[in-house]
Image (cartoon, rainbow, N blue to C red; front, side, top):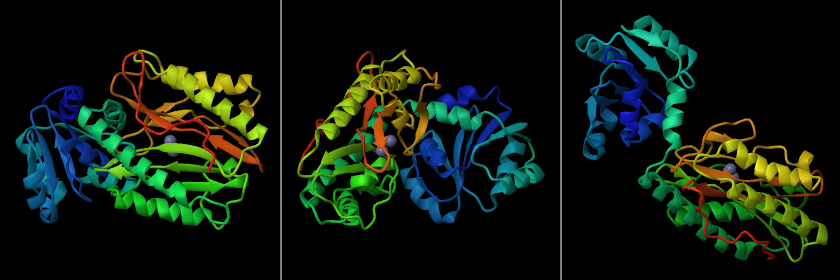
Length: 354
Ligand code: ZN
Ligand code: ZN
């Protein structure tokens, strides 16, 4: 079933439509990226409504069953469709429509406006990736890996975090990434205890851990990887913490099974870290879905009872962060595939000493 068909199956009858206005879901359903417009889905049809700036490009790119429609004033054109097709109710994206848009829809759309369920439904549909989406995620990952391996050549005592981050971002673009998937995290020494530290003027020193949490975007799809490497040498304590995180990572990966739950994956990592005495230093969820957005459903956390299914892509990213000292995180994306997930990374997870 395609995403459009899944959404059509969600609509209760021929008199109900779904109006999709967020950039990411418009792109998801139509395959066309634009900064404005709407997708209108009914049981029978799916239309991409665009203004004149995008109309010609969309006509050349958009594939059936999506029909491209040029609008002049969106609300008026929508109402014309609603009246001619006897649409009585329309779902809107409850999680992304602004209060101002909602007021406008309530005041001007002819059908009853439904403000529940659509965002959740789209997020559920997006969890299951097609092979085409998976290939794009893998391409984004390969671009990141190539840039990462080359950037390691620059990692030495005296260089700043910022220099490493800039080099990596540059290489991601050189190797075909349309952009970085998020503000790259390239941090060293004590800063590695900050799970979302920002690269700054801190200089790499011998004996530091250096954490890269990095990703690229390829044709709209994101990748996400974290590696923690040691510069020069690693103390016994650093190695022990690294091994604890790596074992937690592997236990979580081992729990990624179709028919299992996201909670089981989180607990596999969390229980190991807690059993080693570091539970209080692992303060985030074990992972998240990845796709057109860097963070999407499902959240891989002990309270998430989402059942894993073939075609989902989730990260596995446990960490231990010792405040003021150092931190370790090891993250890769996994494709749910029967009893054994496919690791989408092609880079070693063992401790690397630069
Ligand atoms: Zn990450
Ligand atoms: Zn992540």
